[in-house]
Image 1 (spheres, rainbow, N blue to C red):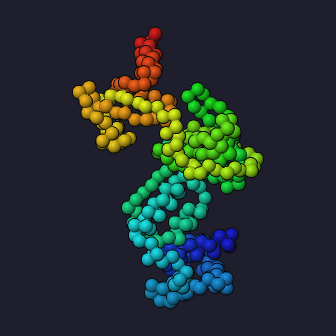
Image 2: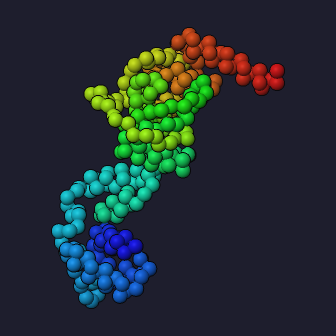
Image 3: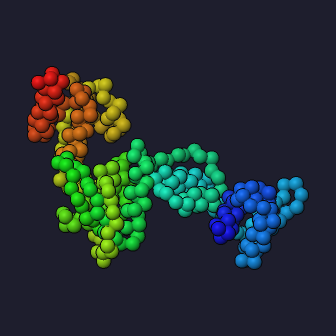
Length: 295
């Protein structure tokens, strides 16, 4: 469509500063005559395009209609580009690309990828959930947790990236409370009818609240070989060295997360507290042993 091509020409000029008619014709797969007519249409629309003849010349936008580089420092520009690029890893549509093209190119010292191994499905989920948030529509989905899966109906309000995962924050009609839903466990989302919305609690969404409320205290010993994992998760000063190993004490937001995390260490971790978790892991280990013994 012509309007798309006109917007595209402006985007190229904003990004590059200038371009020749043959370059634009090749990029948009039209004739030079068509580009000339497009330039005339843009000028009639009030966009001050300037054509310079000779070597190094071309079509450009008059000064004042481009984003001046001195409006942003190099550090600010690179941070902005990195953030937009990161959103581009999980968001479909031309708006991110168009915005990136309107900015001066950075040196790319920072790269952010907010996607994951299920990137294809994540992109679709985020697109649908953003639409439901904007249009104030209910969203229904199948949510998986420790005991299986259940159907949820939620008033969506925010998408959050926290703790290396994406979450939906909203009012769960099943639990009659605000909840965080991990997108990797959220499947088969569908947009529902509009909802009136509600006044959000002050300071919400506060993801850390879900860590503070109902926190479970873990006390465990880790083998020295597991130190790199603890550094990765909590930093080099997160444990105390003892004769029996590295002693770690942390609060966890849920039993399931805590148990799965400890099990990921295999024989390199031993739970001291809480006693109920120690017993659960003992039973899990017994079942594993029985399976591998073939009994």
